[in-house]
Image 1 (cartoon, rainbow, N blue to C red):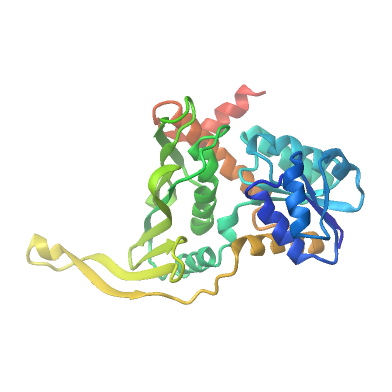
Image 2: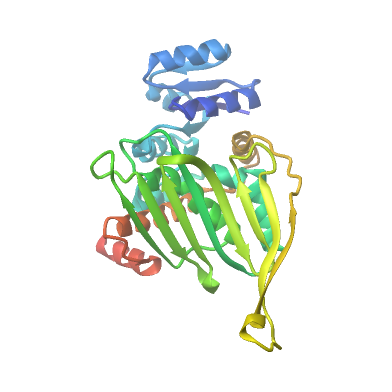
Length: 346
């Protein structure tokens, strides 16, 4: 296999360096960052790692066939575009870009150059996400009524993106993965407290086909650290708690049932409270699974599970949600919004 370079070695980029370094010691892994102190620390940790502060060296090196873009989101488009133009396969951290126009441009460039483009929608590679998707697909939960997720903590405050763009890609991508469909419309409301124009807390509502609804709470200004998804079905309910050290998935045999024959209104709906099942799920580090998937796709020349098209649809919903957010929460019909957006750009 050929060499690989990670561009951007900050709080998340260094984890990508670690995983790619461990997965492919027989090949050279490069780290590129303008911060020399970060590169020094990485060289001390990984003796065989090669480093450079110059992205141009990565682009011009024909031995490097794959580039991992882990810079700040505002730089994703330009860095990925340059790598694709140089003939390299590209892995871009979430979000793919900060606009649907740029995301589509990267997808089309990758397709025209016959290069792979993968997006770091990490939660889709989580073993519990895959287990939960199977529960939904095989009908164990029954008809899905609604889903809600919470991704909150008292954590790093971003300067160049709000809580929607920072946290939302995780929840949007896993929603689309679990339901295997895209929303019809989206509405978002939030508020700024720490910096003008950058929302610290955002509440998003989405409607999907077949009356499925979803609600997402995103914040970096919260006393709790929650990474939780709840799926309510007609037969059972499931909770995926990623902050739990063990027992991350719980299935509740709880439901409400309507009776055909009943004597009083109180008999019309009955509530069932059954057992709680905690299935065994072998949990491997999701980031390692994600990195291995990228390497496998490069070797086999097959589209990644979270390819550029998947990244594009997430960016489109983020963009529409952000439009709603900036317009006091007005619902945005996705098909209509992007039809109008596309026509205005002609």
